[in-house]
Length: 329
Ligand SMILES: C[S@@+](CC[C@H](N)C(=O)[O-])C[C@H]1O[C@@H](n2cnc3c(N)ncnc32)[C@H](O)[C@@H]1O
Picture 1 (cartoon, rainbow, N blue to C red):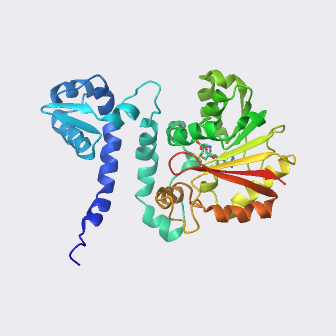
Picture 2: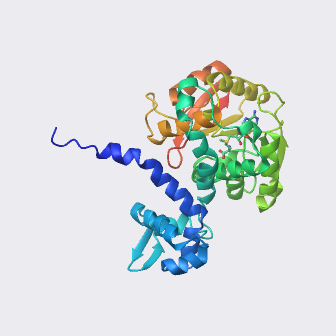
Picture 3: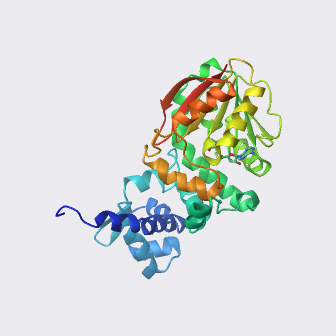
């Protein structure tokens, strides 16, 4: 086997080091410090207040991973870090996603083995402190931002007047969609802890005036009435099949015939291995939510038939995310 090397094992096994280095570089403010301009280690130490010896370890790891470039004694942000990690105005900010992965996901992933063996989630998301809830909600918004921007342009919202976002997080989808569609009003339905974060978040944006935040449980409580479109984004994957069937039935009971339901998720092929991010994220859904996983489009098709929805189309969004549109039959 002359062409076979253990390199893929080494690369994958050391992947956690790469991820953790990236989280920490972001947390110590390395990319923000470099956004002020190229700098020597000495200057970076002053900017970040991190000791020079350990800052070098963090900065050199970022050079090795391609996020930072080094020119003699000077470090500078590479194009990806400059665009998405340095706090540049107007570009999607991925720092909240890294904070979420570092503070919420990573500790839960330490127990992935237990989750795989027992099927039990390893986070305590039902008992998040307000600070953890904020890190979770802002991190999910950051993760969702590319898909949300794509949805705002990919689907014809011009046909709708009122959009209900069930499990709407901080408004990660409602805000960009309403920004692009001034005639549309929105309702964000969330559990009370997340709804509190969402209220503060949407109040900071002009579109917030067209958004009502309603706290409730999407399985137990009546859903807000009077909407001709319902969005469920990145939420199917935190639920079991039984809970997804319950949710689809519950929404169908509240939806007039012809209401559209937009399901944004990392829908997979029938093997659950494409897109490649899906099986990796399935581990995240498992450790965070216990019952979650990445579902295939074919699995969802069977749910729609069972719960009174007629499938219209599936569209790619950004990255591994895609949209399935169904209509109340
Ligand atoms: C992964 S997040 C997705 C948030 C948002 N849709 C997005 O894509 O950015 C799943 C959301 O579902 C909400 N959720 C979970 N169970 C819920 C329930 N029983 N009722 C209402 N919301 C719920 C969570 O609070 C969380 O914000």
